[in-house]
Image (cartoon, rainbow, N blue to C red; front, side):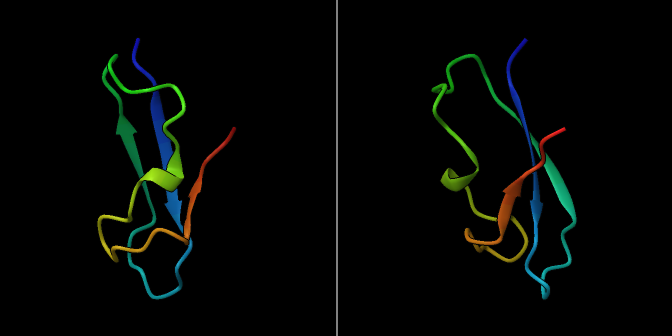
Amino acid sequence: MPRTLEVVCTDEGCELDMFEMHYTYDMAPDVGVTDFRCPYCGETEPLEEVTL
């Protein structure tokens, strides 16, 4: 099964709480949260990966 990445935006001004990305099998294994931007506020820095 392809990997998923759960991400939270910690920017206080952003209304987005959490989102999940579903990768295809072709996604490189070293791709991580720093490679993406928040789809709501557009920022990169406040994104954090949710780890359980």
